[in-house]
Image (cartoon, rainbow, N blue to C red):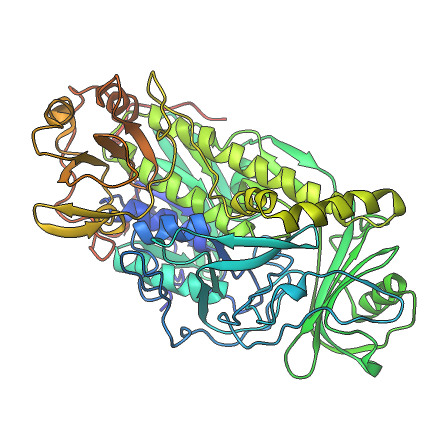
Length: 617
């Protein structure tokens, strides 16, 4: 179902989200489920079926499951971590190349079980004239993915336990997740994910306007004005805030006056599904003195090729690649003539990286590729953006509804920008490892040893999957638990057995009190000033949780753990003073609830739910 702009008009909403990809739609869901009026402006008339991202890493899966957004895509129970046996409902797509922002999904992940799609991967084939890396040797399973080294699959899949990965083309990483969590890696075509999130958003009352290209973004002391154009007219959206989730070429970022830290491209790369004559390229990762050629099985007898030319960046990065350019590049890197034909698609990418200097300017926010881009190695782009969406979504909803002071909004930048910078740093490190040349051989050999040793590989795997994230503490004291992610432990309450995923489905902060009912009385008493906001849950003690109480954020991170100080200080830091007018949250904030849609109406100023924010940029 689409909502294509067909008339000129004015749309009033609390929040205008620019960009109807997975990131923008999850932000919209997090807002709408809490009663915030949202409109999404998307330039594409229909959901694109072109190859885009496919990898969702463990921490993003864990956060999305806690918010109820993967229902129908992933099944779980306490500690089960099960995926549907059907493999999902997505169509086979020739995966690879650019997403809406121009960034591809990743360098590919060998899937040991072939769960994500057809098992078409194989260990790297030795080809005369090539140094073949051992990435594919971790397993024969095909993956549904784009970017370097991915195979072809359909629908939805996932791998629990351990999933073979690489670091800079060196195999040995095993990405895993705790047994109480659903999966370590979720493989899902972005088209499927996008349709799923859009259906969820519409069910919550979000109005998604397709065919709307944003041409103007302006903020003033009382709100924002966003202007968009479509084939049949123009629309002006007025609201309190705007979220730019409109990709790497973000109009919101440019018109919002955001500065960025930029890392220029040092390599050039091409991707495509083509026919290769003569069988001269075997499936696998091939490294030469000039760069890399990664070969996977494509569709219709074609091969999926990725090239990385380490000699120089592309001077014509805005020009669409041609088959002849791909042929010359493959032949030059291979050191022999390679004949190509019948391309299904071709695309261009590089290691150009950028991160916005701030994710917020007054009433304007950035998320996803609008805020950060990096070299597509490890399939981290989509996951990083989805984690932005969950973090920003609940905080912005709380601020708009008056459940928190505006200061909560600044924590979005404080938490998510360092995470993106870290992704950029370690993807740039991987590019350095991938460079050919005798001076780097000892370093690559050292990494081969480190990754084979287990411990170091685990550190890198936790970094790639974002499971090593520890957020800044907001209280005066910090113990072990503050800022860490609470696993999906089983909890025994007076009403029976439940778990963290089930409790966080409401979208409320949780005050978990462990042990005898009276033991946490003083903590519960301190939280009374936020009674309409925080859900208090009495439960039995949990082995391994050496504390009497935990305050858990809606996204699953621990805001406070019992110690010398009670929860009052942290509650005030997050949600304002206890005298703050905490309007009770809706009785049901499950992600299947319905909220009023944004409306088309005559121009009138929105009613602010906050004190005035910063003036225009």
